[in-house]
Image (cartoon, rainbow, N blue to C red; front, side, top):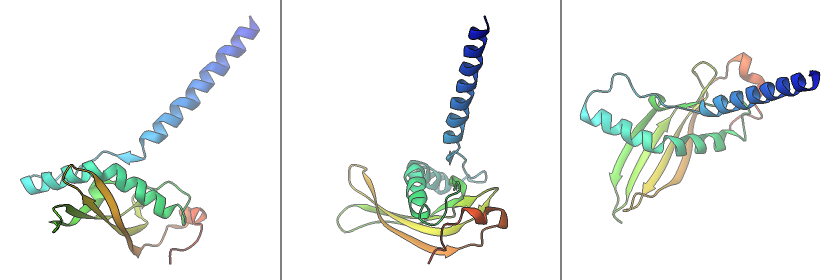
Length: 149
């Protein structure tokens, strides 16, 4: 009987660990839109950001992984469309401005990502530019690998 109790406890603990890992993974991309967006243009901007937010988050995390080991959050409402235009070769370019966060909404930096979208909707990152650094709060200083140059 004791053997079955130990197995049950181990099973429950294993399920708990798996559940925590799943929830943590779901928190990497926060699906939140601008509350104040009401015009058609604002809603279109939100739609474009929503389509690209997964790629933006991936690219931001890849860039900062060389400099910072803590969790970095990319919020839809901290992402803007800086420019959008149709290019000569019939593709569309979209430049996003992103303010990645650490902890409870502490900005880590400001970056601009340029994507080119072809006629069938395939988007590709063509330029990543780190524009500005922000001071990391003291409680997050231990996650810094090296300063961003």
